[in-house]
Length: 462
Ligand code: GLU
Image (tube, rainbow, N blue to C red; front, side, top):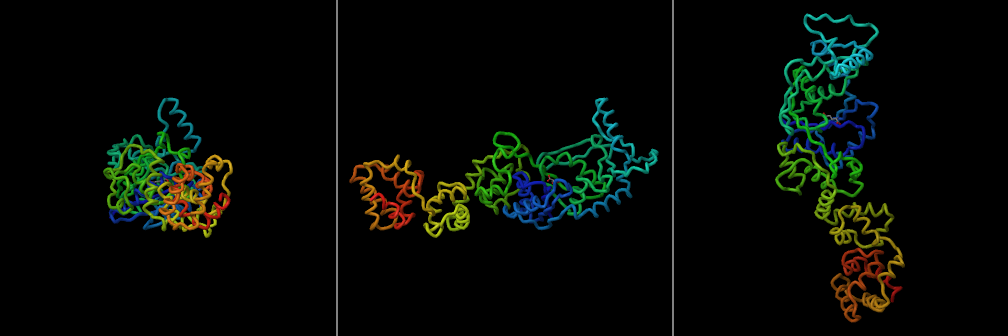
């Protein structure tokens, strides 16, 4: 039975890297009919906030990554961590260390001066035949894990391949501070153990923690899970992904008019592949997902590709399903929805040219508000030569059959009679109706705009 977890620290918004980790953990569990657990690692009291917890819930909900167990909060599990520490002290796999911070600093100074790597020297580590100093009464001890001193910690990372660390490289990790609070790596270990995690899928910024965590798990007699460490996500310029590369918060993508399907599809391809497939549904992702096809090299974030996918999903979703989302956006821009054309029909005409919900909303706004066109722009496009043809066209529109084909045919007819080119009428018509020249085919725009409103707009040019 596969059990995975997503274990974010609630110190900011849910960013793209975190969302990808969540997605891979979720997809792996779903693929195997396993269990996906959400665990909030909120022990860093200074940096954790309730807003960030909410941002994680919101981001996961928006992406549709439902957990089967949790959310568990580490702060609510303190008693359990302390109980395990007590057991380890009892079993001799952990020990109190009374070294003061001044002593530790002095030790590090001396090691650095000798050109050695600063590390704890094991002075409070109990060994058979070794006599320990008498514990000072004025110092509360930290608790250290008794890391094995011989041999290696090795695991076959499911992304990075075999990794091996010599135990002598690892000193005795502090698992509880002097005030009794457990430290980060220790809480992760107890949680992964208690939650019977079979596959730890996480960012490779944690790869250095893994040998320590494995040693503690072994000392506890716990089954060691498999590990899969995901490589970083870089910006398109090859540097660490940051705000400079655009939105990095998942919810910012929602605000910017992306569909969750597009973001999911995009994130799945950030470091994982299924042949040459670029577009696939959530169901296909679940059916295909595996760890074997995660690349160990860094993935590069590519906004153009995300836009391309979003465009695909906008078209696939279809105009009527998009209408409520576009309506929301238009309302924010003070559009009068009831005064304009059927929203689904408007979306259908524009979806080919807009890659996001926001771009669609902006493009459709002129259909739902009354605005006199910019005089200078109109002057630029409406020549004296074209005016009589425009007036005649306005007249024809009073009786023409109201559909794009008939309107187009009537327009061509007038152009021909006046010896004009299409743009000489199409451009001023676009400016008069929509205030801009970059629009879909003018006959379709006129048809969508509606007879009465078109006639009202053109009345001044008759
Ligand atoms: N809380 C850690 C983080 O947000 C993740 C720990 C883990 O996955 O083991 O980076």
